[in-house]
Image 1 (cartoon, rainbow over the protein chains, first blue to last red):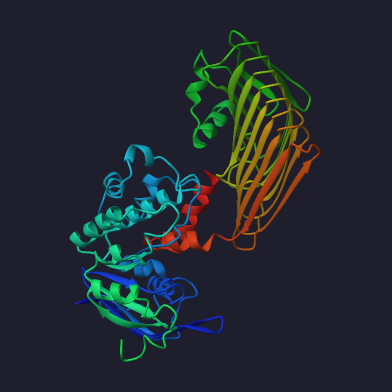
Image 2: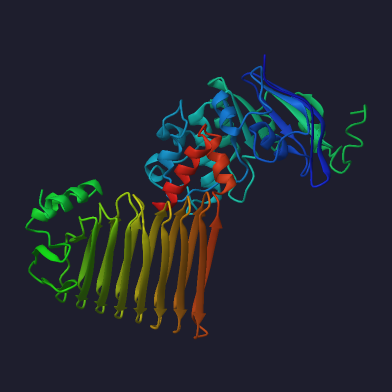
Length: 240
Length: 311
């Protein structure tokens, strides 16, 4: 059964078409990697699924767990079981890590969630989720919050990006934990080795999904740069 | 119920503990209206207070080298709906002494109350003063609070001030603090205020870094909603080699509220450096959406953000 179904999504911003007839299905409990070069609409798609302001599709339908969610707000989608770890997580003055990890949490305790992302609880629980954290620390805490929520679908937008990069092992450990807990994951990444940890993968180019299949095959196609500069013209061709 | 009991009830409602005033190891002064109700000195710490026509005059002196383990509590309040209270306070911390002060300013029933505080604070070389001011103005907003302070910090001294007014109404608040820092001195001024209704918040804080390697930060966190207004002026002057200053102002507005931030930085020595940052606006969209993605409704998310910012 599909936990997420995107049907023929169109979206444009500042006069440029970003998503053009995109369709994608994520199965319940699967880790689904999404690969694509910069500017192909990956983060736009993530924001649209989560329901962020300004990312309403011009046309097309988004079904989550069988429910049409196009008109639902972020928190309404979250309460259905959607959550997202942003590529650049927000920072909060005066909000302790301990309290942040309890917001909406139903699964992991803050201590165990931190341990799972490689942070020592006694060092981090009473720190603030503010600018005092490095980029890498903040991204780990964001992943810990996703673990604490145990959603039906977690959108992880480039958890491997950033100057203070998370290790492949850390991310795979998070993916395994989510999978074993029954969560599906939409994993946006550029890295082959992260993609390899997925159950399936899709490649996005020119605003639409051009191929879906085994992660190694999709990663190989992506690595061969068949679509790196085609702007969709080649990838949308039937030869791919 | 006596006025004192009424003030103590307000102290409890504002999160304070009246039992602390009975502790013989803790210095304090309690002023209700224009009456000095209670005060306690300690060895090395003199607390004097006299009633005047308009209010009270307080003198506090901490002797050289004395380092108080427990904070000094000052409790000023008006329990009637109308009234005026003027506090003139002189604080001297002699060389290498240190103390914490917790000021409770309580006006639980204020409908037409005016509270003016004029403070002159002298911090000696190597001395350290931490001053925490907690206000509770009740639900009516009928109060005018005018705190004025002139602070001088000697060589290697430190002054840390933390002003908080985040529960109940503000009324009209007009803070004006001036701090002068000598060589190697450190000053940290923090103010957190949440305005509602027709509250008016004016904060002017000036830090003058006259000494070599002196350092200062002015940090202001304001939230205003309904028809409230806030105007924050943070002034830092760097006048000596190695002086470092920073002005950091953040204001969140909602509804019809209006906020203004005026950072003024001035440097007269080529080896001094002063920076500033100011952010005013509605709640940050990315923060809001992040919390909503945890299932919080928009109003719940705003509450978390504002409470966090106000500490």
